[in-house]
Amino acid sequence: MIRILHVSASTREASSRSRIAADMVLARLRESHPDQSIVERDLAARPLPHPDVGFVEATALPPKAHTEQHAHSLALSENLIRELELSDLLLISTPMHNFTVPSVLKAWVDHVVRPYRTFQLSPEGKIGLLRPRPVLVISACGGGFMDDMPGETPRTTGKQKDFLTSYLRYVLAVIGLTQVQILRLEHQNAPGAGDITDEINNWADQVLDQLEL
Ligand SMILES: Cc1cc2nc3c(=O)[nH]c(=O)nc-3n(C[C@H](O)[C@H](O)[C@H](O)COP(=O)(O)O)c2cc1C
Image (cartoon, rainbow, N blue to C red; front, side, top):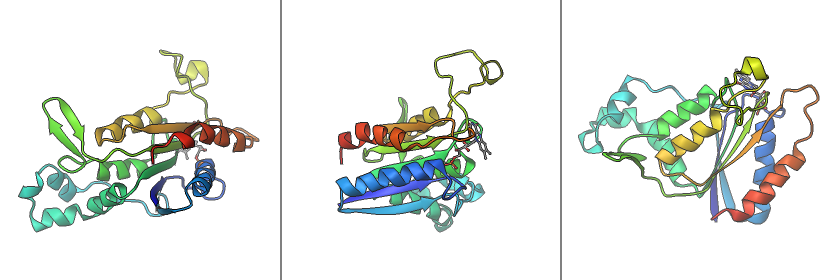
């Protein structure tokens, strides 16, 4: 059996392009892996709190120094990390907000990327502590990207930089998740933004068979 964790972040429901794409990918995974379970972590429907002072103090201490109060401050983070640890595949579907992840998804990252728990500090840098597993990221945005036009600004090109997918790749690697496949859906606000079925299926054709599950 494969266990899928779907972390979603769009405030839109039926009209959300990232949710439509995620549903299609999940349907394909149901066909290829009928024996599966899915945990839905909908960050827009149930937003997480931002890190508070109790969380900040507790995360700075090694577990052996934790008091009951520290453990209490980390309880939600612990649940979210357990949810991630129990998954064989992580699917993140998200809009782009101001060139990067929406704040609800950033809050999830802040709860699961934790020293002593999901990464270890070392003189050589941060070492991920999670078992490797495939990660699929689907991002939807209204504009188009200018990855190959360094130095240009949105004002001169009408295009934008993508800090979302580079950020997620980087921060997931910190906790040990380096097998990340990304689908970027651009121009999703354009009047008459078209059918994305082919784009999603083409991507799924390339990616899903290669997953090491
Ligand atoms: C607060 C906010 C910020 C946004 N920022 C960007 C952005 O920086 N770049 C972009 O291309 N689209 C931006 N958009 C548009 C969304 O990314 C786009 O509508 C996307 O399709 C939303 O995802 P969804 O269809 O899954 O809901 C923004 C939308 C909102 C509400």
